[in-house]
Image (cartoon, rainbow, N blue to C red):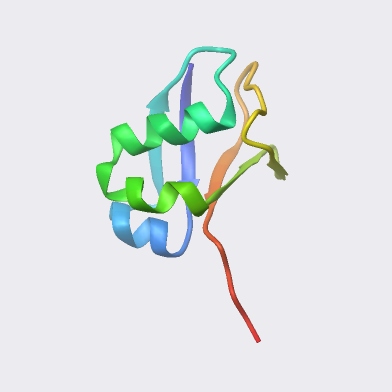
Length: 81
């Protein structure tokens, strides 16, 4: 299935756009999705170990399994004061 992954902050800047589209099979985990993103956009690869995956408006664990189309985003770590 084709997934458009929304990108924010430093990820958007590194990629040069606000989304990257990847092709993943049904049953791919969130960790597998991040690996596919790193292949599709090598500029994002250094950031992927520290980003979180959000699916259908909620953070998901690395083992989360995609079973169909969902709204997906990669969220970089944030800091504030």
